[in-house]
Every structure is written in structure tokens, then in C-alpha cells.
Length: 394
Image (cartoon, rainbow, N blue to C red; front, side, top):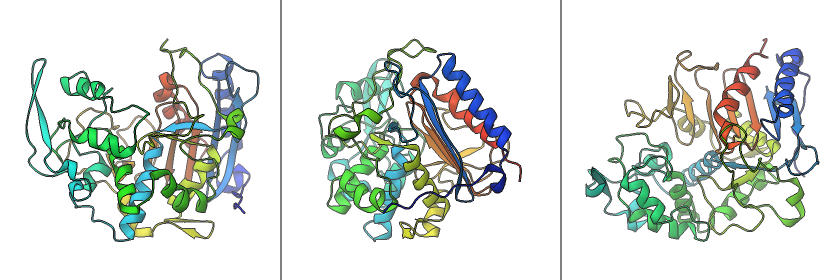
């Protein structure tokens, strides 16, 4: 039986009920004004859920209201789950973080780095191998095809590295044929690194990525709806975006999660409910255990949520000021600089459709916002964080 998440009144865990009501009012206003179809917000402190509300509609093309158990495409919030999976196998002694990935994926044995001359692209040999740590902290030299307009980004698109009718093994093999954008270990570049990490999980475990996650993380934590697709019986619980984003005007083409996934993208293919992710967050905040189930050791969580960049620069300016990156999470290093509140030691990430989460060990606070509004994700990530921290009283 799945352990129920304990609940508490906001005041009993040092949160202001009026401030959380203000958060609710803002989300209700955003829905009423037509900015987002709906949302589910969840805030927990000291291991107890103090705020869990649904807003708006499940599907803007229908009248059904949003439900607390709505299933959302979480896109890049898949990455922390897959990073945990990798570190579970690290604790099993399957690899070292310093291992070259070519030890397990021989196609990466001779990485090359792109050299650009106008619209032409050549390449040179990489100075060193790509390591597992590089994949987990996004210093591999890989990129995403949508993060630039260089000949290499075009080559990613031409190679169809994002196609859904491929296996994880096939995608990794394709990526290995393409040059890197940067020398390994020299730049932080958000990338398909975690897709390759998902393939490594398959090699290390002997299972498909989805099967390993289900057996070792999702089922033990009671993340009942987290998966790479939604079964037929639950299609009526899938949250949908507007067909055209009202802010950007861009047509929205969400991932089709109504059919079984062939490509189980470790970097962005999963779905989950807010409650599913709350369980995962609480496990991390608890130092690796939840509901009597231990997934990782406390020191492993400390390693994952420490900065692994040091002086390595962010090539794209994606990370906020005062932040570094660990093994699967952005990590706050300074109390100021960033234009939003938080504590040193916060760690977090978000998804392309607007979902976001963070964990604040200093405040014993976790929060997740589930929306499907790709064009507005930056606004809601910050607004939600601002208003949740405004509710902290003790």
C-alpha cells in the first residue's frame, strides 16, 4: 500500500495561510485571464503537505476542472530522477564518476569537437574523454538542437536525434557520430547528456530505463503515475496546454504520452502528478529515504547537491546568478545575486512545459508547480517561488 503523504495546517509548519491564499488567488487570476489553462501547486514543509490546490481546467478544449491527480508532462524534471537512478547504480559499484563513458558506450571512444568557419563546420580531436560526471553536470560538450543555430545544431536536427521512433541505444549511437560543441569539461552547456546517461543506466542495469526506474524508484516510492507514457485507463487525467500559447503566439505540440514510448528519454520523456514528485522530493530532502524505503545514502545526496562546476563557465548564461550545478540539479551557492528568494543549498530544476520544483534543506521546504504552458515557463517558475517564500514565517 502506498504511504499517504502527511498533511498539516500551514501555521503548524511555519507557513502563513493568508500568504498561501494570496498565491492561490494569483493563480486563479492567471487562469481567469486566459494565460494558462490550469495548474496544480503543492508546498510541503517539515515533511508535511501544507498546500495542495488545483486551478482551472484539465484541458482548455473541454470543461473538466483540473484535478489534484492530474498527470503532467514533466519533460526535464525527468533528469533528476534519472540522475538518482545512475547514482543508485554508482552505489552498487557499477562505475566511477571519473570513468570515460566510452568504457560502457564504445561509440564514444574518439570524441571530436566542432570547429566553425562561418557556415562551415570541421572538427578537431577532443582533449580528453567524456566522463560520467560530465554527463551528470552537463559539461560533456553535447548540446540540444534547439539551443543554437550553428552548423552543429543543424546537424543534430538533420540527424533527427530527437525522433521518438528510436531506442535509447540508437540515439546514443547517433550522438556519438556528431562532434561536440565544446571540449569536455570546459563549459556548462545544457544538453542531451542525460539522454546518454539514461542509456548508461540501461547498460549498467541490464534493464530498459523505464523498467529500472519503475523497479528501483517509482514503485518503491509510490510514484504511481510516473512513467514514460499514460495507460489508456488514465488518459482522461492528462493535463493539456493551449493549442497556441497566449503569450508567445507559438503553436504548442506536446509530447504524445498516450502511446507506449519507444524512446524513453532520460532527459525529458516522463509524466507525473504533483503528488508523485512530492514523494521524490521528500526522499531527497530526507537524505535518500522515504516511507521506510531507502534509495540512496545521505552522503550520496550531499554529493549530488553540491556544486560540480567550480570555475567552469556557463556557456549560454542559462544558470541564474549565484548558482552552480551538481549531479542532476542546479544548486544555489550565494544568498543574493539571483532575482528570486531562497537559501544557500537550494537545488531545483524545471520542465519545458512549465513544471518546476525546488528543495530547500535549510528551511525543510519542498514545492512543485505543475502547468503546461511552454511559452510562460520562466515567469511561473519565478513567480511561484517568490510567493511560496513570502509565506514562510518561522
